[in-house]
Length: 391
Image 1 (spheres, rainbow, N blue to C red):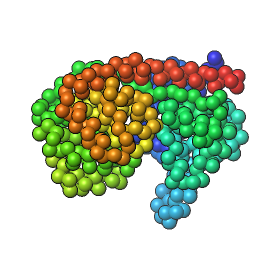
Image 2 (spheres, one colour):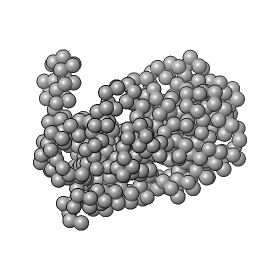
Image 3 (cartoon, rainbow, N blue to C red):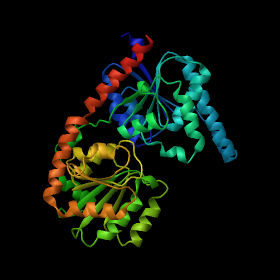
Image 4 (spheres, rainbow, N blue to C red):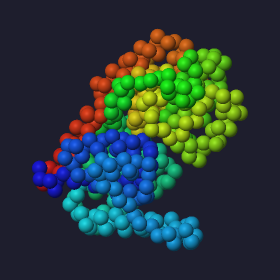
């Protein structure tokens, strides 16, 4: 394979911390080490992971937006940013017409494909769908637009069988275009030496506390409200000094959730930690992992919890039940059902032997099926296949 065939252009909304962005922060540097030249185009400059990507030898660029935007009406600002993004992407396609292009997340996919079609590039284009298509229900035209754009792709990647099935059955994507690559995580942070007491002390948590953790940005579909209601049902039955670590960007509902916790008399048990860069350590001092989502693609947070040896309680959405094997590595409960969530949490909180058995099985499952190396090898092979198709 010639060096020119080892270029990949990634188009992404931003490099703020989210599930997709964290996934790419693991995978892309590993692909660079395999000889791929990675460039990331974002629609928004900055982002917590931009500096990290640059240090890994990955070029990052975004549209230059004029300061004058702040002096005009908001609706015009949005329109000008939209046009600036399309122009920025179009110019890059014209400059590098032969590069393999990989779109992540709906906004970047739609704007990026529009720019690619305007630039009339014929190089391989692929899109990753990393969640169920529930978002299309909020914007009825989106499904129609995306189905029209799918025709121009060489392939579409799913990160779970649930997402794969939706693309095939609801969006009529031919199986010949579909590919499944599960997320993979770096296991090293979950195996490194750890001073548990130092972390507990820094958080002002007693070593005798029963600690649960949820890693998810505070957005409605992550189900934090359900989790708080569930905990309110069993608060008096849980170990006396229990704590829930909530890790994630507070977003627009952070204050609302804090008020809910206070109204439910849970505020002394809940720790709102915001965005953290020591998630593996926080998981390793915990005894139970939770993900209460209403929708998912395939959540890295579940894999990370299992890698840390945590029994997991997750809702039965997206690929959650593909990661967590019910009654073997954790418990899978119906979504938006606080009573079922409460019962599962209480069961594992009170049965230490069962929790440890689930945790050990989960760690082994991640090691055997979801290691970063396996995921990177799949991407490497996938990109090579795409280039060979048009060679």
